[in-house]
Image (tube, rainbow, N blue to C red):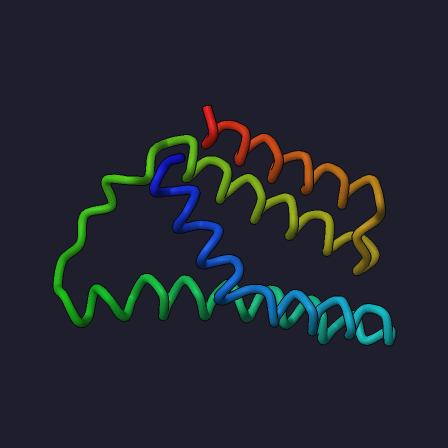
Length: 112
């Protein structure tokens, strides 16, 4: 098993599980703005703090573990989330299946 998969699972469980529970709870209560704001805010916070803080502490870092596929999936999923959430401010079941498909494809790519 690659180090990237272990790291991604640890980061997901450690940083995103609580936000996911809050987002699902907000969506069930009909507070969709809160759910979408939580998703976007959490991602911005994780990118700035989880990536930025080690750079501030340790100096320059090389990102040898990230390739073109990683960056393409990041931008593709972010762009699709923006498009899906912009239309009527809802994400349909079909759009959610597309996002989960991208997630499954990416993890399958990492396992190969």
